[in-house]
Image 1 (cartoon, rainbow, N blue to C red):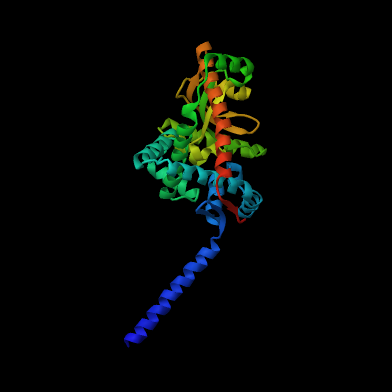
Image 2: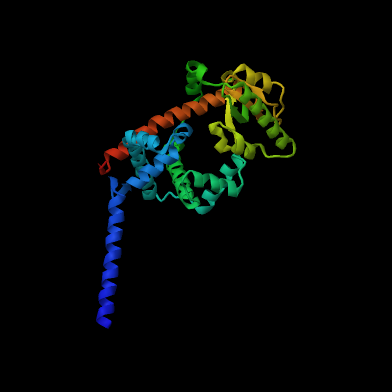
Length: 318
């Protein structure tokens, strides 16, 4: 009997080993970067996470087709990320749990999301909370290594800034700007549907007047890609907006919400979160300095990535 039990146990362990091997074969290695590997599942997880809102609206088959056509480009980006993380590790640059938690809380605050809403949003994107924290930790580390090796060593003089400002006036924004959130209902072209949309918008306005959270209502009702971020459109310069928007914004104070209004796209309800005035000369000089430092940083960053690649062992297995 002991021999039989031993034999059965061996068979069970062999079965586990075979199954584990099959799983590894299914998740094939698509690249080797020095002593580390990048797998097919990592590559596709990255593509899913970085896909544009328009791409995410496609069917799974259509989205996979686009991914297949762009595998090489996304893999190239993953290789660059892996090289930077390896460089950071060699320099003992890391991100602590507190830094990651602070970054998560900052993101939730920016998009006016509760912890439950944030986790639900991650779930829809195919990420667990732990997976998202890992990705965020890597982004913080990459930012740190770039700042330490490149940005901290960039020096620009007043003369450099003056020269840059003179040659790049069009690139330095000097208009009134707004941070806006919107709830958007798409127009169908049917007059009966138009009446239904106006009725739906009136109901949303009613919820807002009763104390409803604009961001939560945007996530629930808005048909714009910004719905996932609570309707946040970010900062927009006055010149980038059409006349319907500028006319409505002119009558709003910070924190106020508009009545529903039509454009050729559909029906909009907007909230003016913040308004910035056109900049004075000192602000323009400061913006020019930041833009110049960023330009130099990108040039040096690209040269650094190139050197990392030239000194690394990289094998593509797509």
